Amino acid sequence: MIVFFDLDGTLISDDGAYIIPESAINAIHKAQANGHLMHVDTGRTIMNIEQRLLDIGFDGYICGCGMYIECGKEVIFQHKLPQKLCDSVAELIYECDMTPMYEHSKSFFTDKRCPIFYIVETFADSQFKYQW
Image (cartoon, rainbow, N blue to C red; front, side):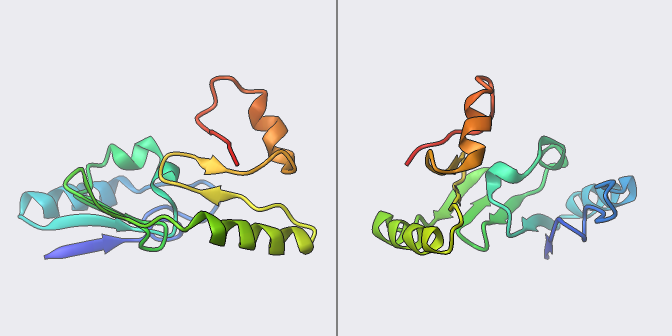
């Protein structure tokens, strides 16, 4: 059997404390010991899965609404949007007086018009990367 877990509001509490119950972690490990596969299925990109979640030892991850699939520590599917489409979407977002940000499996992408660009730029050891 394969069991899929959403994260936010399901495995992780949505009360502002963002707690993962120890009972849930124990149940995941018990199910794995009984031969079941435990997977995360989330809208988050893989880069937004915190280490504490990775440390649970899930058997696989479906992230970014299916744009990234990892099974047994092997990436078996990753879809990247074409640059031309990203550019078109960015222009539409700018027309709405907003700033686009794109998430990737290892980083997020924006440009110098994005206010957060300047914040991230000041943290040399930040996990975040930026480019356009």
